[in-house]
Length: 409
Image (cartoon, rainbow, N blue to C red; front, side, top):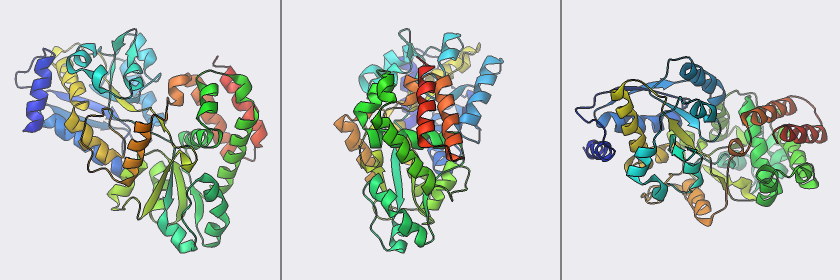
């Protein structure tokens, strides 16, 4: 009943038709793992409670598989009611082509500018002063997840940072463990590279390269050290043969692998498996070297539709996604952080509390797809795939990476 009242009030506040609702919206996304599905169910439950109907359009295979399908449908005249993207530049061309619904009236009526934190999340939804997406969470990709069981089996302490993790590899291997679990997908290799970059080089170097676009720093010794560390990661992941990220997470939660570099969404898998943060597994933001969060997030965009009833339902859903109740229910299941600071997260576990502490401390970075074009991001994904699948020297990968960045200037 609370959700019904909330949705009704939100709809009325932006002057939307409200007679009975009962509008079906197909919602496409790539959240298909156990933890992700549990989180999506919270969104669907809240939307349905308001009298509308969430028609789930999950696409397996992750964002790299789903995004082309989503974009093709939108540009081909078969739009869904709402669709997930990682906000930033992924949907920019669709917005510029006039294919996405303007949500500025919803955002202004609900005070998003005063409630969404950090402000960069809403800024990434804004094109020419208009708001085109509803952010739903803060996801940070740069965590090291460690199996307490694997280290207990090996008879050694759980590492407190990346350097200790690398040093522990021989003893893990002697105990029959895979040191580093890594799925065989391009984005996972690229995620590991990005996490190692800030952990080893630090926040200032990352900003000089990715924000200031300083190519001398990109080619310098600090980044050379990063590529050497990525070479270590390649060795540690040599016996990891799984495909999907959640399969790699499963190796950690079952104690078959020592650790995994993955986003905080991995926490949802541990939760579904009944594992307890701080007891069964350990989480290290910034790989334990430089604790920070990249302030990227998932957001929902709403393709334009000629049907006024569908447009009204789209705006009701957009408002609902940012509401306090939905923010709490969704993010506790997803393992991510809420996009507003005025919600009650008393139920947060040990790892989420670590993330909230970093967020409060202000160690924040934009994600790479907010600072580089999709072409550059794709080139570097391809580079990391080649690197992890071959014996390419770290020095050669470093040189090619710099050239990829220069192509985006």
